[in-house]
Length: 397
Ligand SMILES: Cc1cc2nc3c(=O)[nH]c(=O)nc-3n(C[C@H](O)[C@H](O)[C@H](O)COP(=O)(O)OP(=O)(O)OC[C@H]3O[C@@H](n4cnc5c(N)ncnc54)[C@H](O)[C@@H]3O)c2cc1C
Image: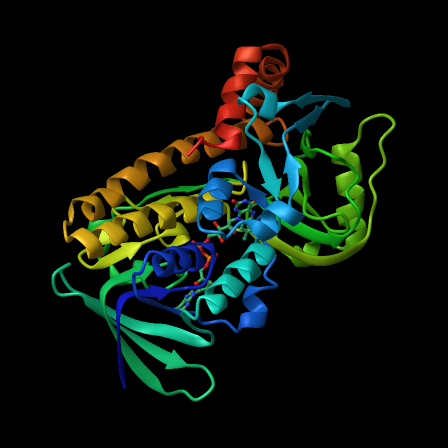
């Protein structure tokens, strides 16, 4: 069996779903294939910090109603260290721009509902198992396999959008010498914890502790996310409920503050790797979101970059199919890479603020003292805090 479309989209994460919705609204034909069942995609809890430019881009296509009605506006974060705390009112410092806190899985559900309402093709439990990308003039083919029947069919398309995350097939279809990735493997891990626990704070909290960073993130009024720095190669099995709560309590401690606990629903050690392809296009194949780059969760950038990529690609594709010129499409890779590097720089700077080596070996004590100074600059210098605010909340568009 063969199906023909203008854009074949692999993956129904934030990148693929946003791209599909915008293309359909702009009159460009597309098909999405997703390896997971629908129930999995709408329950996979990950990010939640939505930048204002993401909200504006989604709202332009009527895709932000859920996040604007149920999201929590957020414009101030808190730093803790040495038993002290201070807030950075980043929205005030960044010209009034603020985040919405809205769990990624709810955004997935909204984007899928919009796709359904538009009558757009979206095949769950259909994995792309192979792809062939020719020149832009030749188009490409995605071979898809149904998880239920095991049967295969081909999607013939003018353009393939690889929105299938870091472990998908699209990136692996591009020769390494073309991608020439730049990779940073961080020398610590993060234990990510999700719990049915009322937030113990109104602001996101970043706690700098000599035994490692701890973070208290916001999700909903009944669910919270926490991060705990841990050694590279650590296993979530080493972290019992008691150990998680007592470590969080210890590292987040400030006077007159109490941590609310709850039922832990998810715990996993994140692969703290930053990865940047130097190209996001290969003939008729375009990489989008985590398929082209990954970033640490520090600063909450990953989902926003994935959506920014898809907004840019949707615009270039619309131009290509309407006007025929390839200039916008050819500019996609360089433009998105430049923007993504700016977020990488911020995330890397943030990681260095949050983490210091443990113990006394090597330069550990020097680096810890340096960190105190960095924190002090954030607290005492408006110029410094404003620079943080600009990067944290993200660009205006
Ligand atoms: C614990 C955690 C916390 C995070 N916190 C934040 C945060 O606070 N803020 C933030 O901005 N980002 C955060 N991120 C990162 C963010 O979730 C990702 O950057 C974002 O999901 C990337 O979107 P994407 O669409 O590019 O890829 P994905 O979300 O990975 O979507 C890819 C999709 O492709 C599908 N797929 C894969 N292979 C195939 C195939 N062969 N065929 C068909 N489908 C396929 C997958 O099933 C998946 O649905 C976090 C990530 C994690 C793991």
